[in-house]
Image 1 (tube, rainbow, N blue to C red):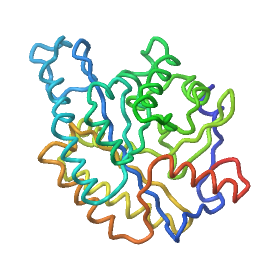
Image 2: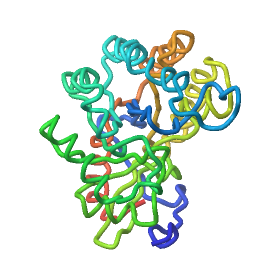
Image 3: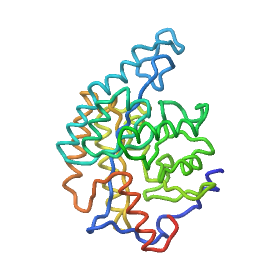
Length: 296
């Protein structure tokens, strides 16, 4: 099924007004991506180009760069979540639950939401059996948390033509790969519907630091600029904002303070709720029922 078959065009100015509880206007959720990089394979991303070119295996410098995030960077980030008492969402590879069990346990102890992020950090278009990969990821999360995940984020936002269908059939309620709106939208699948909860490519440390090569302060500047506009837009109806972190990027010593400055600023703003993806989903479904609509 093509994207145009999954959802119709819908201008945000022509929709019924979505309302958050308690007079809030904007729901913000923060996603922390935890990945396992296979030392026996080409690294998903690189900080250093191999001096002789090519894709060396093992690629120790780039594997270690990522590994630092899970050994050190995540724990720096976690302190800020604790300090500001905001909920987190862990987008985690199924295999990473065992590989980095203390991280998974820390998130579970804080009642973070776990969402599927592929079984390994691999393009979903290159997975041999997509349905099996999704099932293995689901089982890994459910076995560890005691709860079946409701949300999915493809590694690198990758999907096949069939991903939403397979996710719906596997019991998922929402996904995040369709970064095309500031409100949740409903996607058609061959067996029903699945909701896309707004994610972000713009306020995403991968895009800013690794692709666009900005300095760390860009994260603070862009996140606050994005927040100001969405907060203003939300006068006309509730909006959703996402912030995305990878421990090997924003968990680096020279960058973390800029994420902290974002939290320090936004926490003092009125009309903002810090939620998880499933909280946003449940609120949206309630609004659909109230408004008698099938989707945005």
